[in-house]
Length: 204
Image (cartoon, rainbow, N blue to C red; front, side, top):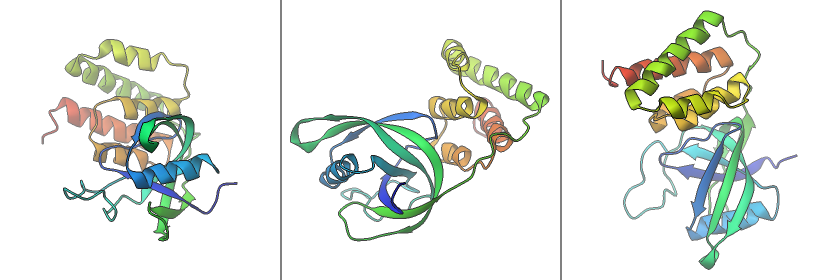
């Protein structure tokens, strides 16, 4: 069982989704300390999106964050010179941050796992509509081959949509909008909205 308080790793432009992977480069001393603690214990942390880019000269120590993030497991760790690390994180679950806890150089948080209903019915017409929007988006971006590779992966529906959310060119706040989906139909509908918005030039 994981502890009730986990390290908090806020980033200014990255959103991680369950069952997807993210390489990260650790170089700040406080996050070097966080990495050593995580690797010597439970191998988990919470990655969350900053609401705004930190002020120049700061490291985001107090930057406001979205209170929904992703529980992540360190599945690979490569030590580098000077205490730096290359880590590979795998998203495990969506969590709500219920409070931050002082006492260490890096941020820490209490959290609760958010339920996600992957079994809720996703009607066929909605599925076809999403595929049409994906095709239109891929054509507008010139990424038809890459999209086909993603769609050919042997994944369940939720994992497939999460992988698309990580891979496609969405804005960080748009990815956050997807991460906060409570069930599969909502995730699909939100992705459809974003795809149509992007194909339309992200303008009204």
